[in-house]
Length: 164
Image (cartoon, rainbow, N blue to C red):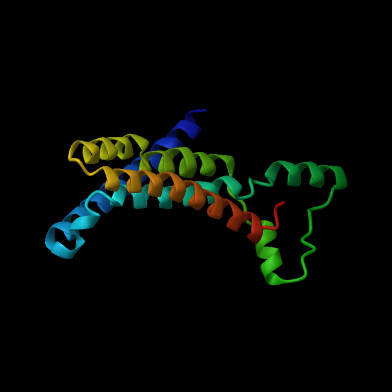
């Protein structure tokens, strides 16, 4: 339990720092270039869509096979063997993310990297400035883009690993 909490904490610190740096760099670049002014605030949408893709991929990635491998090895009294026909198949069959790593990357990193609260305040601020069309576009980009990115991340991992 404590190790899981620590993993989530490490992921959260990394996600929050990544989000901060991306926001800082985007704001600086927009301030320096007049042509980019229309993009002010859109980095949050980009972060949310990228985080949705990452979380979709993490959610779909195969979990650790350790428990099933141990049970199989105990039953057969022999180490499990890879029966894949190619190097790529062999690598895919061995790839996994442990449950703790999924906590760290999913809840920790993605949870602090993406932020619904900032997105909501961005829309309220746009509406307050009379930028209704921009607020609607921004909301659609976050919602549709986020859901599509999560779907694509999930689908990509399932396709790579042949998960149905």
